[in-house]
Length: 182
Image 1 (cartoon, helix red, strand yellow):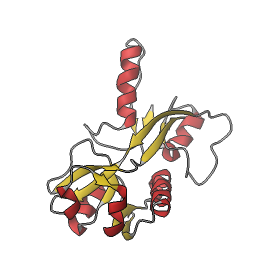
Image 2: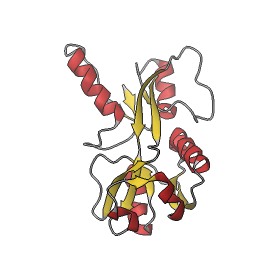
Image 3: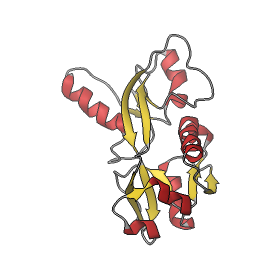
Image 4: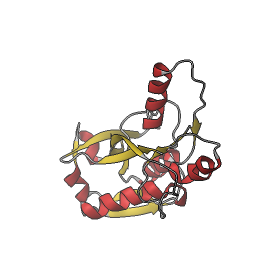
């Protein structure tokens, strides 16, 4: 089973689904592997080394190969990751429109094409300013850059954050990232 990247305690959708599958079929042996979403997992799925992968199937830069099926499994609510001293950190919830006054740090890593595509869609749809585009690979790289540069960034509001960062839910509307099983 492959899934999106993330460390322990992150409560990413693949971790939640693995817990569910283990509870439903405790005798079925399976191994959970961390990868960078479906783009990284496709060759292993096609080779038969993986049975299932999770992630956003849009924005991969190419259609899914024939013979692979997808099933939507979750709409993941996203929030904003902020330096603890950022003005938006004073709010319990941050209206998405408030990000228009606070340029974002956005993830543009080639290894996470589907995440980069989601971010570009959100930035365009909500006319959000971008302060900095970073190619850092994974959540740890984004967290380090957000802490160092002081810009907000899209992210999960669950899981442990490095000292000096905080997470707030976004509202009006809540941005949702679709996860699929492939």
